[in-house]
Amino acid sequence: MARLSLRLVAIAVMSLLVALTGLVGPTERAGGPESAAASLPQPGKRGKAVRSLQQRLVQADLLRAQYRTGYYGSRTRTAVKKLQKRHHLKATGRMTKGTDRALKKAVSRMTGPRTWYHSEVIGRSQSGRKIKAFRAGEPGKPVVVVAATMHGEEDFGQYVAYGLMEGRKITGIDLWILPVLNPDGLAHDRRWVNGQVDLNRNFPYSWVKRANSGPRAVSERETKVIMDFLARTRPHYVVSWHQPLNGVDTDKVKDLALSKRLAKNLKLPLKELDCGGQCHGTMTAWYNHGFAGAAVTVEYGAKARSTKRMKTTDADAVLASVGGRRR
Image: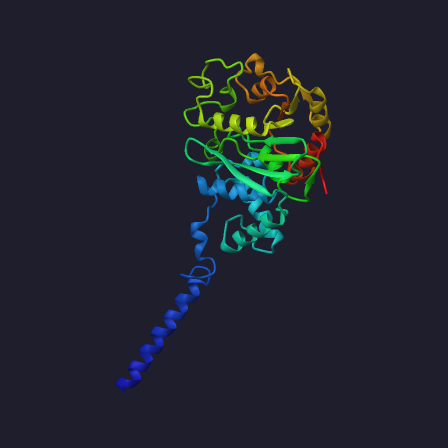
């Protein structure tokens, strides 16, 4: 009898454990398929993890670049839902392990084969972040430099740069691509390099001591890195990407025909981007003054174009404007 009672008690305990396990559910058990979701960013959160998620959503062309704010709000949630629907996942707008895997696939699909055959670290930011240059095209052809993200919060142009780094091989020019000139600014979503200095007011030509122009010309490490690189490569053309003024510069430009080609091919207006009379110590003015080649500023508007358009149509528009083409 005692033995039977013990067996009944054991059965009752096992039944209770099974019932409790069923209430918890497979996705909530330790080590279950969604157990890592707690470490993924979720709606309502802010911070670097959210910004990283948003960057990946932009790369996958699910979110426009101006919404890479670091806050997981309604636009980010909508982008995640869109991803989940495409991959036949439950559209909650919340990140799960399955959603994270789907996002990796979506980014991979938007990333083409590389065009570049050489890369180098041309210097480091004040915080030690690498400033990288990538070389594509044909050595011996006219040298062209395409540079972006001089101001950390003006990051749309980097997607054109990445588009030039992907796809069919490039011919007709010797192309150098610098996607991020100010990695510290990009990391913190701010205009300045460290010390609240505007990198594009720190070059030595027509430098003026004003707020954010630095204590002296070429006071910043990043300025010197860029100057050394351009002096070494001596490009025929330099195309420098900014935002949000929506146009191609005609103010004191060295090669107006280049500006006109870029404006036509990129479907942007021609504009005198004179900074309201405050354009002093800029990279393009310094290069135009001291070298045989021509430098020009291109400005996107405040609202980003789709990532696909920037990486394909706009990247090819730049190539056509500077004498390059795809094989």
